Image (cartoon, rainbow, N blue to C red):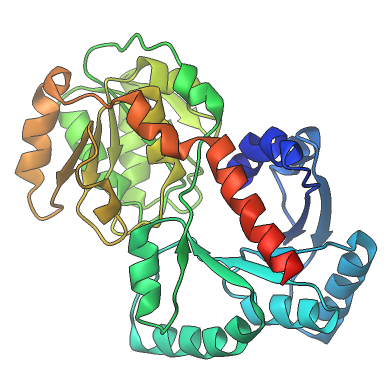
Length: 324
């Protein structure tokens, strides 16, 4: 989300929209980038109780926004209700295909029933997310996520048998599924993501790749350089929303192997994306045996993912909320 905001910053200004960001929590590693992009950034610790709600209300009173855009999932209801009390119109975005387990589903239904009454528009970044939310009785407008202009301009000089993985490590990202294959096939690997949530297996394979000199990037920096050099992008996730990292790979012209998982149906028919089942690891191995033969994305087809397009669409939503 933060990278999308910085990418859209000049286009939001073109739309005469002045933006602020309220960050929640105690660590904000992307705050300086947002400030440098022109955003006013404020912080609150949480929204878990009356004291936090009061502090949040104080920040809103100081900022005096014409429209509040809520991205938080767990704190959706207090974020919306405080804004309602202050008579601030609210726009909401749901960023992921959330699981349908009974207890979590019940909680989300309750939150939705309460919060949605006070929201002007609810946005989904993909049709997958919109369809999943319809099972909660919600009707969502789709505005795709977007990527920074620089990914459309990257010069590509891929090295043979090189792969890039982008995304903070977790069981949902399922990185070890492909890392084991890349190690077996002696790939050179670019691995972008916070490893705090990585499994022991993933960390072990990354260490092995590093020991053999075949892990040429490991960290959280932006993947520009890696996308210019990698032959294939990999996303074996168990579920997704509208992954910006994959969109960046498409905009850069990098062939992608992705899982046929919930939240990934939007990738059907897109040139340069090969969809594979996680139940068929042999298909992944076969595709990786000769990555030079994988279909390449057509950058022009990714134009809908441009930051200027996303900023314009959200500007229309904000104006509608403000004038309602």
